[in-house]
Image (cartoon, one colour):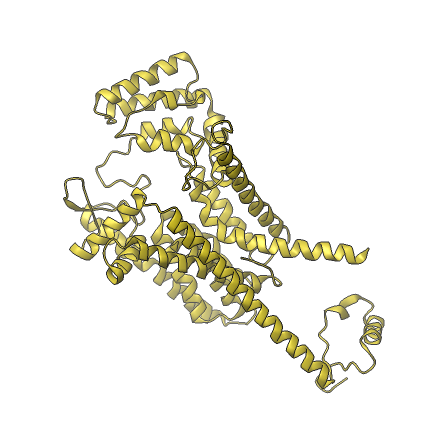
Length: 486
């Protein structure tokens, strides 16, 4: 044994293991690092390590190139501009042209608004300033770069919390990946850089969408409660926590003050139904939708079209009526809605409220449990083909054979990710309770909404991808161990 406590291998590895086993009486020797005094062997190991590093960077570059190719191809083959995109873009242009966080109505009048948080409009304004107004193509390229950077951060996050695992989404997903990466980095080296990166990530996630605040709720405790590898004085940790909290709440303090000054309302995030003060929220209609709406098709055909478009009774499923009397009452309300210029007056909305109360009273378990669980399942399990050229009724095989087969394949791919993530959770990697907490909090929030969309679960997928990678590697190691024992 050398003075530094290192072990030589002069007697051979096998004899060394036997000696250690006799001394310790257990297999802990297998976890010790062996140091060799043989120069040639050390050089060979160094060469192998360098080769492994080149292979690792090569595979990383190949995976990123594949991801970039796929995204660029989809951008060219399936370009889309949604109403939400134009809404956010209009806000960004008004910030640049008029210095106001405002929207432009149908008559061209600009007026202040609070229906959305300022994060994404600010993001768009930056790139419009650099590349020109309405240059959504440039924004798409920037978001592709952010998605790929998020993939790299996730891979490095998994490397830090687990043995090497193979891993292969838009600003929100990047911020979540950055938060996870900074969390692991802080516990390895509790520096101001990692703490500020984590704070910036969770703050911008909340500025992009109100539900983005759940990232901070789930992960911030892990930052303080998780075991740092390096000791840090308690006083310094408290100072860092106080400064990071102040930095995190500062943008929302300005936003809240602006909303109070302009609208005289206390609104630290954004309204649930994306309405400005004084606009109707139609609570009766919203509650009636929640008594039967179960999937994305109902949201697309009915919920998004009212008010402003006809209420087509033929597209209502049978579960929307409990009796012929309810069908008759619903038809009367739909007729009154059409006669009112396809607008939900307070009287019509009250009619839907009465109808909803009747349905809830008759079937409370359906309203409070089965339908929310069904909507959540639809958001998690539905194949993510709503942005492809595929009919909404993709499951009707007789209408379109190839689309149905493709959609089921997408559903299977989605299910495979979820199953692999579940396997990864079973290996209980570091931070697994906090990732599970985020899944639970987000799913509970999604159970409260009326109209399910599969995109609402995408914010969970950075963690799903990380856990799936851990599941693949852990399952491979477990299988290899079992085969070796045989």
